[in-house]
Amino acid sequence: QLQLQESGPGLVKPSETLSLTCTVSGDSISGSGYYWGWVRQPPGKGLEWIGGFSYDGSTYYNPSLKSRVTFSVDTSKNQFSLKVTSVTATDTAVYYCARAVTGTVPYWGQGTLVTVSS
Amino acid sequence: DVVMTQSPLSLPVTLGQPASISCRSSHSLLNSDGNTYLNWFQQRPGQSPRRLIYKVSNRDSGVPDRFSGSGAGTDFTLEISRVEAEDVGVYYCMQGTHWPWTFGQGTKVEIK
Image (tube, rainbow over all chains, first blue to last red; front, side, top):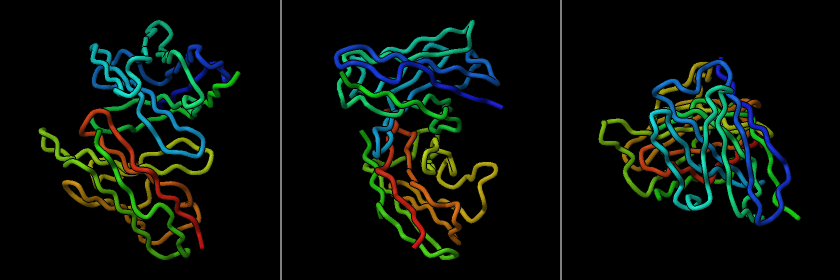
C-alpha cells in the first residue's frame, strides 16, 4: 500500500528557506505515469497546489510560487523534496506531499505544519 | 487560474437527511482527451484530504454509495443521500483539467 510521509523543520525564520522531504513507501518514485507533488493549507483555510513533477522530467509550478520553489528527487532513498525560498508569514501552512495521476490526486501524506516566525 | 466556487460554504444537516454541495468552475473542465477532471475530497478534522469522487462521478474504493457526483462543463454537484455522523468535515471540489489545479473554498458539513 502506498504511503507518503512528510518531514522537515516545523519552524522557519522569515526570509529563510523552507525545506521538506517526502518519503515514499509501497511503490517506486521512478515509476512512470505518476506525478509527485506538494499541496499546502494555511491554518483554517483552503488548499493550494504548489506544484509537482513526473519522473519523465515534466515539472509543474503554480505561477504564484514558481520563482521561489524548487523540487528535487533522491531515487536511492525513494524521496522527493520541496524548497521554498524567502519565506514570509503567509507561507505558514500544513504542507502535504501527494501522488497524482492525470487530473486527480488519489494519495496524500498526513501533512506537516510549518510555521514561519522569528 | 480556473476559479472554483462552492456553495454553500456551511451546511448544517440533520442525521439521515440528504445534503448537496454545488461547485462551479470559471472555465469548462472538459479536457481535450474527452475527460472532465472534477474531483471531490473530504477532509475530516485533523486529517488529510481523502478523495471521494474523480472524473465527476467515479466513486473511490471504500467510499459509501450514499456519496454521488454529477455534472458537466462548469456545474457540478456532490450529493450525500443520507448524512451520517462520520460525514462531518469539509468537502472540497478540485479541477485537474487546467494547470494550476485549483480547489474550491470548501464546504463545512456539520450535524444540526
